[in-house]
Length: 614
Image (cartoon, rainbow, N blue to C red; front, side):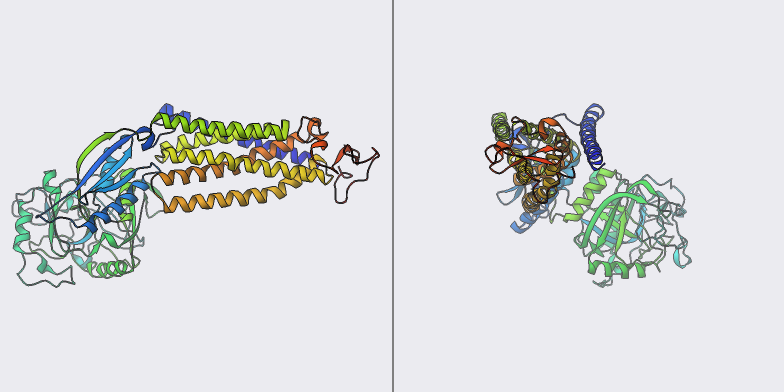
């Protein structure tokens, strides 16, 4: 009965391994047929060539960037490039004044923008909102006049879900649209919608020239006549005008919404992007707990920013919504500004004590992920323009790739020859296992090239060659343990089970050390070294998978065959090859001494064996 259960379990494990292999192969074929996946692994910079981009710092008012700013920017760009996948890209400085990014293949414009964007996110209080046109609206225009439906992506929400009213605090006549059911109840409608035009529609009247309090971003004195003039002259319909907006973090600025529909007078920075502790992208969850199709970026702040965000929300919840006043005044709206453009400007319904916020703004999910990565690694200290872009040839090329593949093939052939010489027919199990491991590695690398932009470079090929030895070690440990159990007088079936329970501990320990070394190297290194570490770690995991789900089940089934159970000379389990004193199980609880160890009389089973039971 136990033998039947073992056989059934082995067959099921083998079937699962075959199903997994077919699933990976089918996924690759399907992605190639209906998407842009390639059937071959994508190659790295040294084997395929790529694109070289020169990023020149944007110089304003004759101020040259310092060497420290260039180095800091380079470090941030390295993290952004590495987050794009194991592509083997290189980031260097040139002349201490520009940054050179070299990437394999032809990177998309989205990738280029994600790398060089400064991604300076700021949270500023809103003092005034008006239409994006430079001409003031006619006097007496009501809040609703001239406003259309909100554009896609023009709303936002601040996280921390809790029940609260959506009416304007303090009884102010808010000009926000009603809060939709799927919007987080913690905020009102974002004032970046077209519905959020000012009540009068005229140019704002500046406050007095009193000196503002530096530690109070809500002081109305931040708005000077010069800021009002900039607001009136700003034309948000022109993208060049929107992109040209610049301002100091400790002064009031004017800015446009991303779609150019609205423009704002904003106070100084209340919370800066370098205070963001973590950023992640996903799809927003509504108050019913259902996942929507709207991408959002979830933010968490450090301790100082959390306290500032809490205090700011407590103050702003008491302020009026954007209304009919012509005087710039702090409103219940906090603008999220990214690189000079207002993404969103939601109001608060309640204080937010935990420093958690979310940002929406008409992103695609990929754009949200790119932005989240940029925010997570920090904003560039200076902005960069693309100063040049050129195609470069591979540093090694197809010749070196061919040499590397030949080296791997020679190593594989040597391992196969050794296995056949040492283990005879049993060595075919090693051959089959290594071929399966090679197939799984190929499918995994090809799929990772599509899902994670993995690029196979020469360092990665070196990792694959090293993996051949790692995989061979696992088989040798297992097979030699089987032989040891046979030397102790066990039957082949018993020897296989006992050997596996002991050998797997050694295999797991050895592979665990290899994987740990690969993981540490991957986390601490960059560029080509990460490619070596990645392939070594990947092949180590595949080795474990193959040994557990293919090699051991296959040996378990072969042990039931007479050819192996009787120790045929070609099986690799011939008693004459197992050393002196080896007994040979012949059935019915009887053991026959190995040639040259006795007179041929039947010997009693060795102590601790399971021969009689079997």
